[in-house]
Every structure is written in structure tokens, then in C-alpha cells.
Length: 341
Image (cartoon, rainbow, N blue to C red; front, side, top):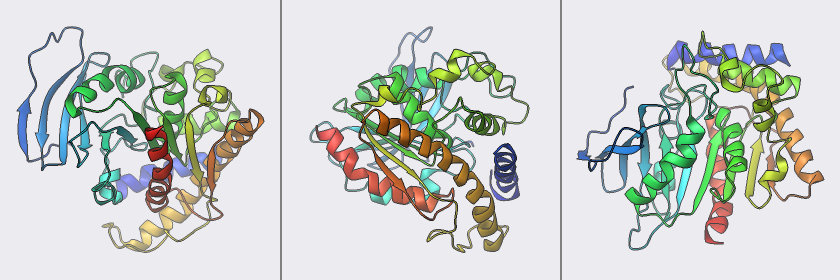
């Protein structure tokens, strides 16, 4: 979603929130995967290496019956197995030009850090969850199955990892990472949830989730977790299921919605820097106010259960990449401690 298309959809998201409250392939060396029984098994299709660190792996998901590209930064030190950071994009799934690689310093930041960074490309508007039914627009979504059952053993083999994982995500995926950790105890030692809505069953939280999913115009959100009141909505509410996060290191952040240090003219959008800044401050501000309400609900739930968590609640900041880059930097020391423990 570059240019006006991206802005229009993002404006649509913001207005609905207010009302309710690629092809991509690296030009490197291609390596084919070994032969496997493809009938009912997920498998590595091929890899494309851009350099000694950056690569793209193409993994076929048996659950979704499609091949998912994964952008990977390999640990610079391969003399011993390294851990893995699953780093998820937002609502556009990284196919809209808005992703960790184009919007942040993720490549240079991890250049000297002994961790494998893995980012799936795809999953737009899916909440990286297992949908109950195939959708006429989004097709078959079994992202939780893919990310927690199909993918880890393949990555462990491909990257020769030590089996220790952490996970982080922004916006839509900030909801997902909490649920992925809660549903799969022990798989992720730490979670970074940046500007997400953890509450999916209260009226405002449910409206927010439906708004994001429905940005895939024509999709039927009921295909995701069913109608209101379906047990899947409760299962995917991290506020109601906060107890399941006990023992996981948690870094949770949100801004106030007021313009802050990262809300500046950058001149990188063809519609002009002024257009981008206005969109970021008005629409991004409204979205951050909405996710802030969800974040405070999660904070209260965790405190009542005496579950430790680091909350970065900024008095300024909109729903935008500059703040999420800061969050990734700031949460990294917590991730290091969790991966070492």
C-alpha cells in the first residue's frame, strides 16, 4: 500500500476506529531444498541468498497449501547455534511497502547480534491466527499453525538454531504475538507487543479487530473467529487469558496519540512529506489512542495477577515506525536475558 493507496486504507482504518470508539525475491543465489513427501508435510522449497547474512527462504505450508516467503537475517556468528527472533509486520503483512526492512534500521541493528531474525512476508489482515473458515478474499489462513508448528522445526534445521525463541510484532501483529505465546507455552521466551489491541471481547476491542480485518475489502470477518460470542473470540483475548502469559518476559508499549519526536517531515513519500505527516499525526494518532485503551486493560489484568511485565507507555507518540524501531531497540536487552536464561 504505497502512496495514495496506502494512505487511503490507513485513513479508512483510522476513521473506522474513531467511529467505533510483490512479489519479492532476492537477487542472490538460489538453493533448492531436498526432496520430501509433499502430500501432507510442510517443507522448505528453496532459499535465495543475498549475501552472507541476508536470505529469503520459501516454505510451503501444508495447513494453508501455499508457499510463504520469509526474510531472514542469519546470526553473524555461526560457530555455535544461535536463538531466533520472530519479527512480525503489521496489518499489510509486509507486502505493502510498510515493513521492518524498509521502515527501520533492523539490518544494521542486528548486524552484530547473535540471533537469527525471521520475518514472514504475507498474512495481511489475518491477525496471524487460525481462521475457522476459508475466506473469499484472504483464502485459507492457518497462521498460528504455520508459525508455531510447521515453521520452527524447519528453521531450526535450516539455521542450526539452539531452539530458543522470542517474538515481537507491531499493530495488528502486536495482538498476535501475545496470543501465539499464550497458546503455545514454552515456545517463545519473550514477547514484544508494540501498539496492539490485546482485548478482543469488549465492544471497543472487538470493533477495532473487526476494522483491521475488514480492510481486506470483501472479507467476512466471521470466518476468522466466528460471530460475536464464539469461544474463539475469548480464546484470543490476551486480557482474559493473561494468566497464560505467566513465565514469559513481556515488553508492551503504546503511545498517547499526541505527536512526538518521530512525527517529523521525512520527504520519502511521493505524495509529499506534508501529506505523510498529516496522515501520521491525525490517523496514526487516533489509532494509537484506541490501542492505548487496550494496552491499559492488559496492564491492569497483569497487575491483578501479579505477572511482571515492562510497559512502555509514552506520553507522546503516534501509530508509526519511528516509535516501533525504538521499541525494538529498547526491548532487545530483555530478549537477551530471556534467551540466556
